[in-house]
Amino acid sequence: DQQVKQNSPSLSVQEGRISILNCDYTNSMFDYFLWYKKYPAEGPTFLISISSIKDKNEDGRFTVFLNKSAKHLSLHIVPSQPGDSAVYFCAASAHTGNQFYFGTGTSLTVIP
Amino acid sequence: SAVISQKPSRDICQRGTSLTIQCQVDSQVTMMFWYRQQPGQSLTLIATANQGSEATYESGFVIDKFPISRPNLTFSTLTVSNMSPEDSSIYLCSLHSSSYNEQFFGPGTRLTVL
Image 1: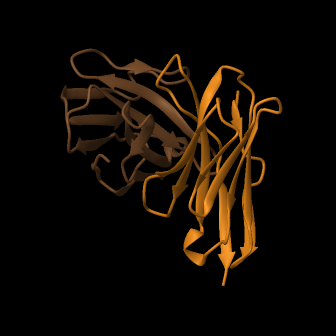
Image 2: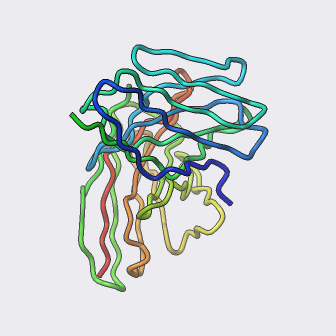
């Protein structure tokens, strides 16, 4: 049972435009959410996180929005750069445990 | 952040054989995790490896198939036993940072079983 879903396996965006990556979850116990970025032949690296007490967290070009009622979060990258081309995973955890549940990933291609 | 290394980075193996993947961390950690990412699928937790005790396996994973060792606080191994093509995957070791409340990952081991 996939508790974290990323329904778009791929996304292409022109350089300089906004990239929006979406993620949905089903478990209402999740209260902490993260986005990871993964380049080929490398392990995932942490990008940005958000706690359920917030609905927005911003770090430079990256902003994560959380809509708890819809059990939906999104990652906005603006402006998008070719170096942002990678696979992005969203992940969620509940405060009761250390386990993170990952989505299937969205492959972002930023076209120069 | 923690530095995590894995060996081998990739391997091609024959059906029925076993492969042991090593994970080395540059700091002492109590809990290490092993994940699998099959093609087109999400990162799936295989087991949690605590130093000094037996690993805890997630549903669908068993010790006979994925034996884990955790001899000290900086090292762990995962063995993929009696491999079949369905075991072709990227295997990642990971640790949880309570300070940063995030998971750090190794570079992964890409396994192909013929």
